[in-house]
Image 1 (cartoon, rainbow, N blue to C red):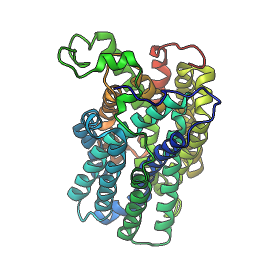
Image 2: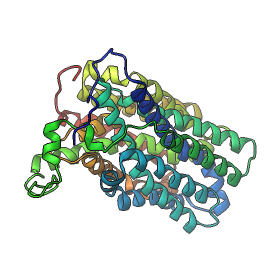
Image 3: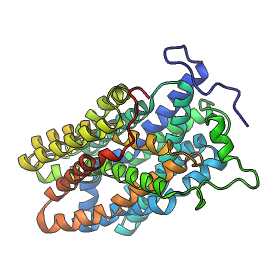
Length: 416
């Protein structure tokens, strides 16, 4: 049952080529995951006009992403236990690529909503799987590297938004654009799997022996989700971590779903409407590249507290200035604030004792997506009545939640 490969490498030692390739493979899957949907974002104004959608109808279509995540998200742990996290993450991106292609070619609101439903459901499974495999690599690496994976996602989002707005500015058809996107996702996400870059064996191979004994599938061993193991404190911890995870996603939702429409209304041209996503994800890349060192130095609680303060400041700046420069500045500041909050939440979820591999991640990811499910139609309805500044207020709410609930995270010694 136990892996013959050491669970970790002392920090500073030379890692094996196999482990380096595994880290590179996880980075590529994260890159592809960020690249895909971000390509569609700069085309949202075009889709809204082409389909004749109101902001409320558009918000309802985008909400289908959350519905799909809720319906399919809890299947992630089950799929990982049977197919391994590497296969689930890589092959799931194929489904995402095809669904994005369908969304780009959608002739009606209904088709658009169904395609986004599939995107959301599959993405929620891929999200858990890529994080689960990344944490496998981190355990063998012997040092915190999880935020570097999320930096790859942010880089993919920036590249996707840049590619999308370049295609829009050049007048490339949306169908052609999404075919090229699908091909890119295929190469980037499935290539490492076919090349054998990921860690071999089952995901449980990298758990500590005592955790493996707890999770053994032998008769008579209690399920980690049985009432005797799901203690109230565990449920409370998962709920609050899920809330913090959701709150840190609010600014990303603003950038991903609403910034292109907001910038378009503020006067940005087709080749510039993707800059809101670029601004937010650009600072997130920087934050995530140094995030592991920051977490080790100041701890998870401080990262969430000060991150929430930055998100609050950034969204306040965007609201007060309410212009193209103000929106971009606010997005950049907010990106710095939420850069490592999601990796912190996922790491905290994965550390909850007594849960099978991927279950803590699955539950927290599902709770976070549940919290943001109602946001797009609510924001869309309010935006129809009051204006798109409501989207920025939604991002501001995320910062306030982070500032309020950071004390519930467990205090950890520096460097742990």
